[in-house]
Length: 510
Image (cartoon, rainbow, N blue to C red; front, side, top):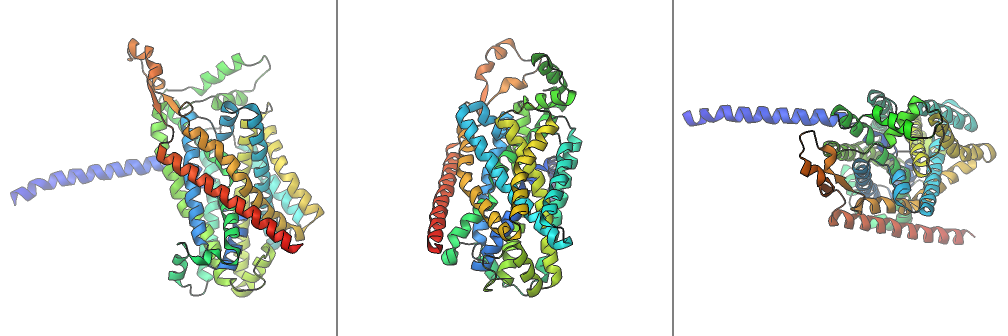
């Protein structure tokens, strides 16, 4: 009895320490909640609605496996983005400008801009259609409303010169839209008739049904709509504010001092305070202590978010479509209007309305983060020398003009074709834009971190003299590099297949 009692205080102390450690980890994790939610928006935009509905209508639940696989690929690639941004302090665009030949950087910039335009076409079309169905707003007016709304947000969003509190507030606003989308689909799933749960979960495993009804071509569209190119630039660019906050709090970096140095070293032109702070933000390189603090939590936050919110939304769209539209002759190739009508007729009018509300929330949140990605791309690849708010308006206009042209000159009949074409473009551009990400994170000279960035006043003279040798290699190990190459080859092969199938289908039509 004495022996057992003597162990009780030790067990209690261990439990207290464990509880304290868990609380500390959760408290730190909560500080990183935000970027993953913003990135997850890219994986639940109107393009995902179109492809997931098509998949459910033609192959029922069989292509849930492709949604799961696409989500895993997205998590892996986004982890590389976080690693690049955390270790180098550079987003993917700025890394391209710094480390690649000028001609290649321009080629990638054009590809990235085309990808953002294609993404924005899908998002603006989805929002405009949702507004047209919900409150009868004409399509061109719906496009204009989405433009004005996003512009106001983007003029306010300044990660370089805004406080971390404002950045978090902005992230929470986007997160509220994401939660709204999830609530809409929870309600929709509640309206469904009895679903064979075993059959649904069987869809998350590979099966021969995946290959039926041109399933691999649809799978390629799902991959293009899920692993979206602009999200790579976004994911690599959203990690810096928390790193900067950590280094500033620990006295490793002063943005104000850096801003003054930049203003002295720059041209004699007058530079505003916000522009100096933006420039200091762009020149910031994280210290090893900041990297150690942030990298693990950033990756976990992203993985948890994508594996919950994004996977749930995309799976819900396919399950709803597979349950209500599978086998219906009018469902195959249906546009967003037809989908709304079928859901309203087969389930209840409120289900079609909620689906459109979810589409509107997805389109607006995706439009916001796509505009941020456009800003990252233009400022990173070509280093535009314009005032920040002018740059943001210019990058938004580059993406919006095609949407206005489609809605004004062609109208509703061409919207579905434009939406599907945008997903094909994204899928084709994906291998081109993932290649530099894999290259940068595998290259030791780029991913090395100098430990002397963290040396303090007590460091010996001999350590300072040898500081060039005190580096840590943060590049991908051979396993990560191999997986990255396999994923790149897989995406490329699927794209070749999609091009061949697209050519054959056009040949059959002609």
